[in-house]
Image 1: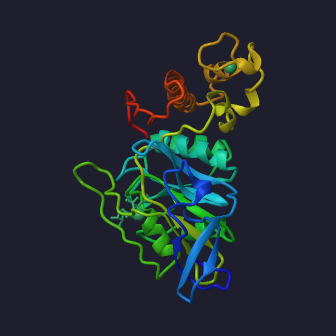
Image 2: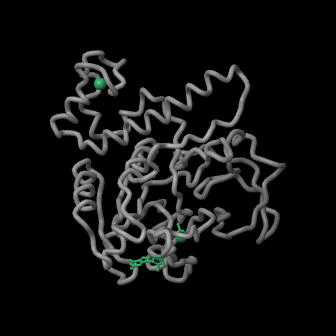
Image 3: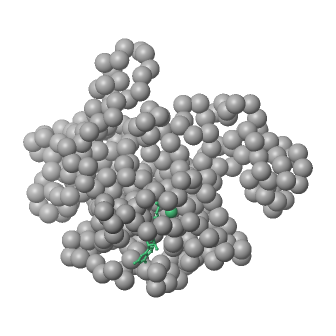
Length: 313
Ligand SMILES: Nc1nc2c(ncn2[C@@H]2O[C@H](COP(=O)(O)OP(=O)(O)OP(=O)(O)O)[C@@H](O)[C@H]2O)c(=O)[nH]1
Ligand SMILES: [Mg+2]
Ligand SMILES: [Zn+2]
């Protein structure tokens, strides 16, 4: 833990867990603020978690609980690439929903431009841009485009998220020389990362002008902590149409006649792929709630849902 006297201390947690975090998969997240009882220059004991401003996390399916990757963040940087590993716009849709929930800006970082791009990725990136999300292109390998990134995160705490192998740790190594995060080539056989980073960690630049959180790449971004009827509010493309459906606020935007959102999809105002992501996430949220209802009172792990098509998670 970095303490107020600017000393970094190795801290243990008082007792077995932090009471305010019961129900979470992990005890603490990178970026958490805590009160520490100082034992010595090198040691401390974490006594209490201070209230979190926001949390970037997901539902951990194995553990059956919400897992926080980062807390108290000012910006989410979603690192992507056109290939090695392939571009997964549905994954970015999910990141955008969680980012909207955090109430912070999303920056989409299109890395590995030295490997080229393709029409499909460019088309989807321009949709994200039209929604007000900033898109920057870079190559950690050639050290290109990273000044613009540095400027965008100046003075902020930014969490870097994305599929394994897109280059999160490589970019952080260029931004903060000396950090030396471990990086590893992606698997040629499966064309995906090898989950090199295993722990989310917060780093400060020596000048103290930026703070970044490197996270482990994940393949699935499951969500449970959004009410299905609230989901459209996290889609900026749907926002202008909310409340304008024939069934008003009770419209689920999935099948109703006179649905303003479905009309906007039909008219090409909302991109069909974005709407499809909405439908998939909504169905996941509804199925998890349905299942909970059937379980009268007793808490059990939420089952793992197999989606028809995992492409784009
Ligand atoms: N061609 C090319 N390769 C890159 C670039 N950036 C990173 N790589 C390579 O991509 C591979 C994965 O990079 P990492 O930085 O380990 O990726 P990561 O996103 O941190 O992966 P996880 O920790 O598993 O989530 C490494 O072999 C890097 O050298 C780039 O701009 N261009
Ligand atoms: Mg990494
Ligand atoms: Zn509707």
